[in-house]
Image (cartoon, rainbow, N blue to C red; front, side, top):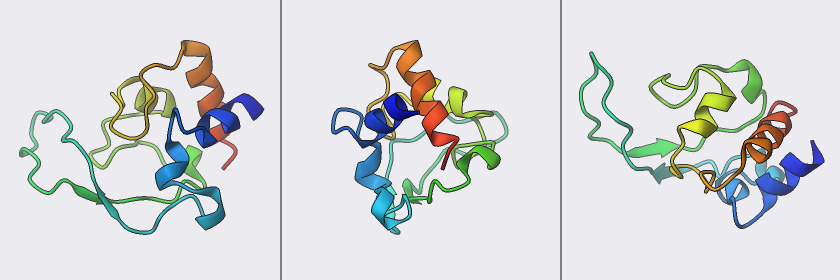
Length: 105
């Protein structure tokens, strides 16, 4: 859990920039994000500002992303593509540590 917490708080990963622990793990504002690939049956995204969610009880709120396309925290990090934080450079072990930490929130 400690390794995941360090990754979450690190400037290199950047999770805490939008999800600061001292503010309930959210900045409580909207933030523009790159569009996700359009899923079958969905219209292309035109509104790309999303409310930054609090991460408390995150483990119990699957599926993830605003369109529900990530069925687990592991899938969220696997397909994040640096949309939210810089996670693509993380090793499999580091992603697992980050997920372990996120499950404690």
